[in-house]
Length: 81
Image (cartoon, rainbow, N blue to C red; front, side):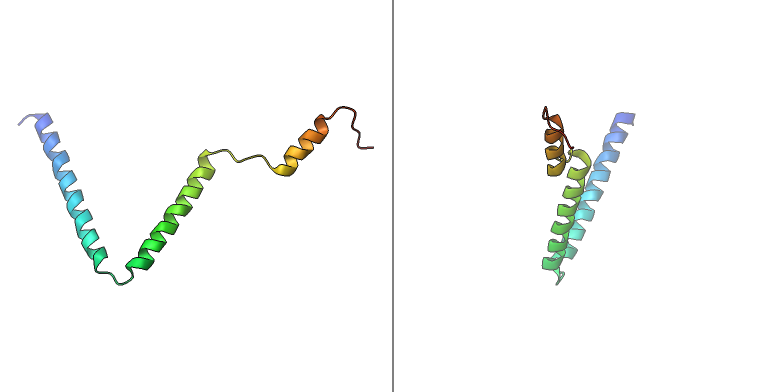
């Protein structure tokens, strides 16, 4: 058999085994008595992950007091004395 056919068959087998495992886990989840709590915990974990991701990749806004201090320094004719 040619290499592309073997690779395609391997990818298909991997995908089908992954789908089978996901279906088995979904079936296990359906019979759990704490499904509501489990889904709430999952939602909270996703919220926290989202918050951390945004903190990592989105620049934080400038502090209000720092903004006021820069405006005060930039005013002409103002003195601290």
